[in-house]
Length: 425
Image 1 (cartoon, rainbow, N blue to C red):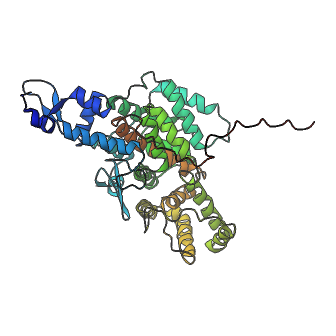
Image 2 (image 1 turned 120 degrees about the vertical axis):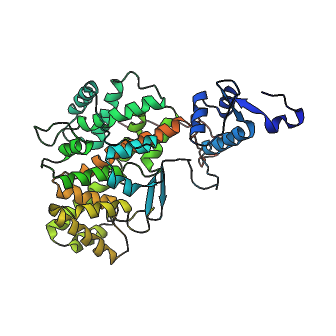
């Protein structure tokens, strides 16, 4: 580097990769990840192999990272995390700037996942699982009780697959992408089949169908399932995705990060919501009318599942796409009519639009699938999004997601507590 005048050394000083990494508190390879994402500029060293970085720019990035690690957003509101994956706007959402509904409609789940991970489309890409990983995961899942739910099965399969992978602690982008491309099909292959004699081949949606329904699938039904997977692949910082990013911030490997997401997904307000909508539709089909079913739900003080979404004032765009595809399937007509009856009946009480859980319920209820099938579809689909967020988080400063607690307990110092007296015999 050229000599600089002492008076402007701070203004023009450039840092080596090692110096920039130390100031940011990250590894040198993470500095280049910032460059590739456009968060940091670099300049090649004349006649050398390294790069230099502007001091002021590095310091500004370090300040932004510190703000995020304190749990506050620039506006002082809720936790805000920079991401290049998903943008949600009024009744629309985008994957890396591309309309997500268009992407999922015209490309397979695997292709959408690759776009989310790499920003590149790979036409015809197919995910395959190593036989060894599948055998270990199936063995673990098969040992579970029959009443085990789908998310528990998937979480056990993910842990078993991790144990079978000695390279799981390699957090480089190439290694994590390799994990993603084998973990997702391993999760599907580990689930018990709905009927015997199936063959694990073809697109992932075809293999998943055999785990969810004992019926043969026509092309229209498989297209709905594949599109649903693509639509559900990510949805910004949902609760499960935030859990994944926290795990990745602590440098948990990809299997563990996915397991963290599955743990949150099991809640009735997240991945399991479609099961409630599924059972609601079956009740409406049994009654032949949504009115008595809705009345009973409201009387019991329960919210109507499958309706409303806090991010969409109108209809959930994912539901809109799936309803359009389901209209092309004659066997889905009764469940589709029941769903519309639910929306119309509830509108007399409050104007709520259908969300993706109701659309998933139409698919599962009309395809001979159990009420838990929507949860399985959601979990398998979202695994790809979790991997995308984990990859992003691995490029950030470790342990930055550490908000401070607001203590509201007794004012210290308090005296030592007295031991409880034993209960009389």
